[in-house]
Amino acid sequence: MAIRKIIRMGHPSLRIAADNVSEDFIGSDAMHRLLADMTDTLRDYGGVGLAAPQIDEPLRMAIIEVPGGPSRYGEIEAIPLTVFFNPTIEILNPEVAGYWEGCLSVPGLRGFVERPQHVMVRYTNLHGQPAELELKGFLATVVQHEFDHLDGRLYIDHITDTTKLVFEEEWLKFSQQ
Image (cartoon, rainbow, N blue to C red; front, top):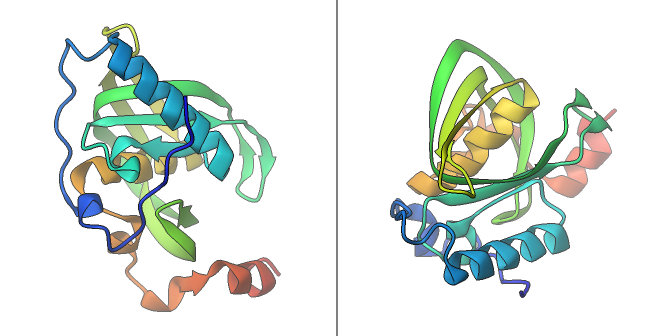
């Protein structure tokens, strides 16, 4: 178990679609080591999600852990540490809402991104079984953000108004008023 370096915007690996995770990998010692590294890294950096490509592992694997409770985004439902292998997203309602997103691979910046707010996630779980999760609101945004990394995309690719890409210090100072 180790804290890994998160690669940042500009690193070519962040712009490449990740490879599907094989059935043989799920449950292997290598998977458990990678999962432990990702968990340690996520918690050390203070994020709510981390995709394997962010630590330069080109696999369709992401973890999400949301503590839940009151936040700047309102009351949020908790998601315990969850591992997603080869996830897909189905948009259940195309209505969008926007959030100020940040990213461990784009440190120091925030951008206002609008995304669909009601999705169904289908994935393979830690035990190699198919699973699904229906999410709304902020949590729907979180999974879309993390899974974008699996396709070589960053949240900044979704910003439609570039005046809403700001340094985090200024966002905290001016946008929170």
